[in-house]
Amino acid sequence: MAFEDYKTKESVVIVYTGEGKGKTSASIGLMARALGSRKKVAFIQFIKYWGVGEHVFIRDIMPLFKDQLYFYKGGKGFYKAGDLSENHITEEQHKQAAQETYTQALERATSGDYDIVICDEINNAVHDGLITEKQLKELIDGKADNTSLCLTGRDFPKSLLASVDIATNMTKLKHHFDEKYLANQGIDY
Image 1 (spheres, helix red, strand yellow):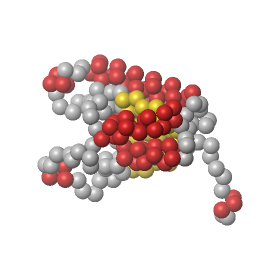
Image 2 (cartoon, helix red, strand yellow):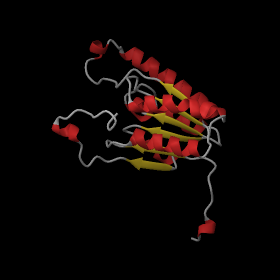
Image 3 (cartoon, one colour):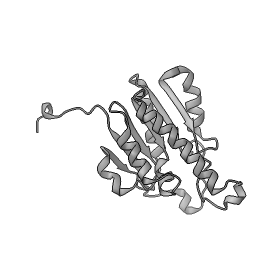
């Protein structure tokens, strides 16, 4: 097939999934590329509520991009990552936060106001039952024609693979966590 036989899609659905590092980092790179191309971006983050490097970075660049960048930090932390009672976060609070974050994502993706909507860690929220696979499918199918969608997190549902345009599986070859080392700030979070 000759190059001139290829077509351009107005928008795409991108998935970064797998057990390896780099899913959020890839979505931040996508955000940087889109902003640099003068695209309007919504970055909706599920799960992570604690201070992570990307929050500081996004907060610091928001004044530069004004209305070109929207950021929403939702979620109550990793679900069932230890005793919920220790964190004083109930299962219902996790579900409510995920549903509120999903509403933010759905509103941005269907509005037609954004060139790309990034839903960081949404796959984890689906896998954990905080939002449903049906909701994820509705987000994919309901996005505006001119809006690309990026979905990150472990365990993207294989049943929805046919609904996306680009899917990358981040595969861990080695990680020092397996040798009982904690995550490094600025590297892992």
